[in-house]
Amino acid sequence: MMSQAEMTRRSFVKTAAAGLAALSAARVWGANERIRAAVIGTRNRGHQVASNLAAAGAEVAVFCDCDRAMYERGVKEAKIDPAPEFIQDFRIVLDRKDIDAVVIATPDHWHGLMTVLALEAGKHVYVEKPASFNLRDNKAMLAAAAKHPGQTVIVGTQQRSGAHFQEAAQFVAGGNLGTVGFARAWVTHDRPVLQRVSDADPPEGFDYELWVGPAPWRPYNPVMTHYNWHFIPDYGTGEMGNWGAHWLDVVRWFLNLRYPVAVSGAAGTFVVRDAKETPDTQTILYEYPGLTVLWEERLWCKKGMDGDEVGAEFWGDKGTLRITRGGWKFTPVDGKPERRGGSDIEVPHANSFLAAIRGLGKPAAPIEEGCLSAALCHYGNVACRAKRRIQIHPETGEIVGDAEAAALSERPNRAPWPAYEALGV
Image (cartoon, rainbow, N blue to C red; front, side, top):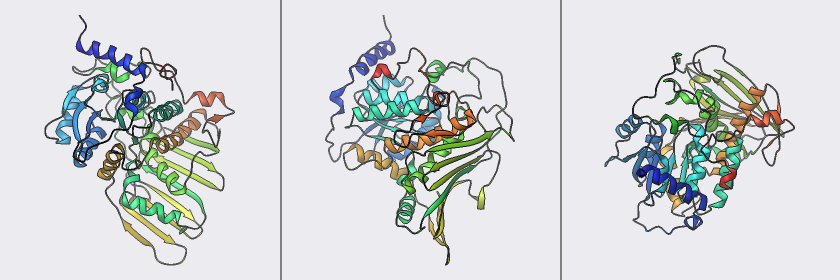
């Protein structure tokens, strides 16, 4: 006799293959009807978003994690009463008809396929940044979102929901900087050293096979999974995808940019030689017509310029603007600097997601914008791995004239997980 999980997985495959077109129709929500959400990936960002959704009025009914210990940690940190139900396999969550929306706060390598499967299952989706693991994910996610226009997909670039970010964006759009010829975004963190340890058996309660999912198989290693996956390129996109997805998104947003025409970069492990497999130092140059954008990354510094570990700057012929989560400062060519304080970016982003589900407007960070910003991260990583300047098609965003470089931003899903082509995306 099949177990409940096996039966659920079989039924999930059938319903996903069918497309669930009927569930794509927009639902009419009652004024007092609560949206029921499940959070997939609960160790860190997942439980934070769960708290924000609860504060915004959603019912967070389920915490789903491959690792039971991370569920328990997430419940403790989120402080949601009653505690969300534990489900280990996300496919069971997607089969639940009483779940309206899912938060995908998994490692990067799961973002694309899980978003596509969630949309096929009729769910609204909040997917953490970077929206995608590679450019092939982007294509699949955008196609799936287009197939299901009645479902909301928001990306966790929550700075777009902050009042002071929105104010600064309007300030720049209003021409107050004049002609902007240069923009810069950066991260300077003193990341903890990851000691090299031997492979081991996964701890009890951790479904490691499910955690690896569609990514290449590697033996379990204690320093490779929770959070540290950011720095293992089979599963994460490095600091480019971690913080670059936030701040390059701000640059694109403020300057109304889409795809660059060319990208070049240099990267390496220069200071901290530990178990991380992504660079500790990275510099990327994005070429746009009439403008260059620079990304800088150092993971061995305690403080950045003027004490700001992360942020963005815009340089125009009338002045410069620097923005962080703590506020923004405009320095005109003539006159005294003007300052604005920071604002909440978390609960407003949750509100944006829930309002969009109810049909009360578009999400602050739609999947189209999230994929554009993720693409900039992928270009940077590809240019550094290929060790050469890459050309980008300004309309499609494809890497052109360099098949070897283009292949660095796509890979097949590991069996038995379905190929995107089999899902029609």
